[in-house]
Length: 192
Ligand code: ADP
Image 1 (cartoon, protein in one colour):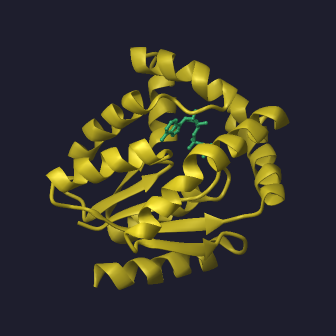
Image 2 (tube, rainbow, N blue to C red):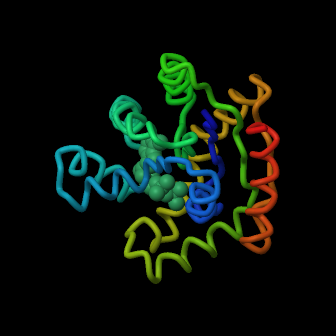
């Protein structure tokens, strides 16, 4: 299976590129942010639990997040693989994901990291906040909290996959299609 992690800070373009990549390679898109927002909208127990964390810009607890991903992976049956977007966001999540995938004999093949400066991230998120309706996109202090959570808890995940020889960094600033072409080329090197 072609299992890929699209990595990077909030606002790096993971969602935008994932949508294009899932079409190109016939992948299942697992975005934990989108899944939590869906639960919130449907007012499920999980949605209610996640809401308070999301609105403050802090991470939802690992156990809850991992359980949700474990269930979602089952939907990959007719797909070439899975693109993980916004997950794993902690080393504990990465270790759990590796186990979930080992059980299915379908490890992560590559982690592609979109690199974008903090200044550009803040501008992009505030711009998105004008139309996304997301409360966490509209407040500079919450955006700062999310970037800080990323630095403290998520960046070490890059090292986890670097040690496995799977990490690759990509410039996330530029034309959407140009960044997409770079990602496609890198994924083709592991899918061949
Ligand atoms: P962004 O990448 O722009 O911050 P996401 O949609 O990926 O947006 O995430 C929104 C919020 O959902 C996060 O701030 C966090 O509260 C929660 N969340 C998403 N993915 C995870 C995860 N893997 N672990 C814990 N919390 C998560």
